[in-house]
Image (tube, rainbow, N blue to C red):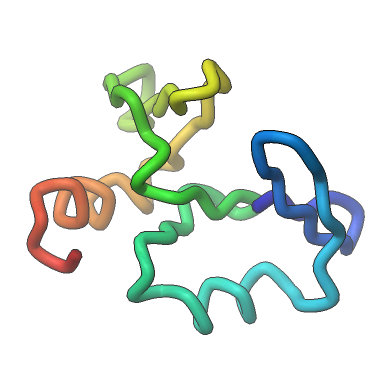
Length: 89
């Protein structure tokens, strides 16, 4: 999920959908379903992460199975670690 210019888009393998909700609304509805807020404008599916590595300034980079790279803001890194280690999944 990505928020751009007050619009929210959901990306699948074959299509892009514009959602009628705000990103925070989607996050609240699906917070326990393997979706994770990784930055101000992105929510990702934890099951689609292929690898994670640290980068500068406490941020992480997640490479998704489709090859796309998503930056994890430093404020979300502790929660990502918890979720990937299985504490909240």
